[in-house]
Length: 476
Ligand SMILES: NC(=O)c1ccc[n+]([C@@H]2O[C@H](COP(=O)([O-])OP(=O)(O)OC[C@H]3O[C@@H](n4cnc5c(N)ncnc54)[C@H](O)[C@@H]3O)[C@@H](O)[C@H]2O)c1
Image (tube, rainbow, N blue to C red; front, side, top):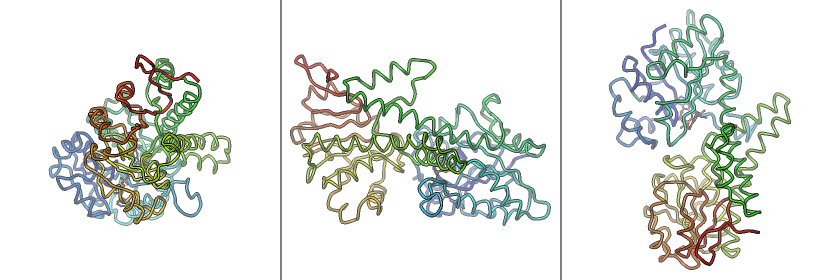
């Protein structure tokens, strides 16, 4: 089976970067990314790409118009391609059965129905979206129930492991590529065809093949394990704050154990992003449906801990500011859910803003990359607040010094590197006193800030200045 044309359905955070890298590495293959949204496609075809990722622009510009195309001509692109990648969104359901937990597969289903409707030749269909176990079977059922004479489909699972903020290097140098598929001669042929695409730049030993269900479950399991590590260290941070232990020291101590490893042990205000919560909830729902209530409860606790961490941090801001933030200006540094992305889905920053706005604080938001319209749209979501409240309480600035001027407090919500480089003396001089910094990402030099006169609060560590101006964790 020879692959000359690939169609990717869904030009989002996964479809765009992953297909740009495929096109970049496979000059012998034409890759067309299609989407229902004309606006998104226009952005991909412009100088202003719809998403920010370090290195993405260079990769797109190196092959766009040569063997990489962005289009809304969905039918034509499907008809021409031998291999179709589905990378549409699979958000948590907001209605009906499984509301708030199950993955909403309506976009996957409509993509599968479209493929069945227009295809006139056999295809390999690749499920790249994150889905519950057995979703590939549903896709297969839709395709085979609607197939035309002589048209055959092989459905593979090829979950994506890129992390936003490092998507391009993750795609260029992945830890592994997972391909799940039917263990039949036709299935193996389809697996080999997809594997051939990746072999253009990824060593064979990193391309792992397995059965479809293992592959689907592995993606959910990977995200659940990562989220669980964050919730575990955040649980430790609460113990640290209550005892005088220092969570950085604890994470260093346990991270140097090679059995545990150092990554994902950074305490913070909690995880965000479009995937961790959604995928853990998906796993919870799956476990419940399989009548495994203990397993469901185990993973549910990862989410509960994350909620607890965000709530705990927001409460600390209020209580440190003498139990009232009404009419106090509070600078929010960072609105993206993590650094090096402009994505705000499930961002802890929104939670903190909402919490402070409910207490009538005047929030002044600065983020180096997130579009102001996006911040307003997130804040005016009916679940957050109304437009009138946003107009009254929120300002969004393009200058961090302006955001902090006249403020009672700065809250670090995202770990952007530039936050470490500011002139905190200048900021201190422009703030009301006492001037507070709440470092929700543990990125600043707390000792220097204390020496400048700030009152500093962070996660998992209680800070005091002693007589020789040296930072100490405070004994109980
Ligand atoms: N964002 C991440 O970091 C990440 C990482 C790994 C896996 N994933 C998974 O990848 C999938 C996609 O995530 P994303 O962040 O790229 O989502 P996204 O919302 O950024 O993009 C999805 C795109 O699909 C389009 N779409 C939906 N239905 C369509 C249809 N029938 N035809 C054509 N286009 C359609 C939407 O318009 C949208 O542009 C999800 O399942 C997600 O869980 C995401």
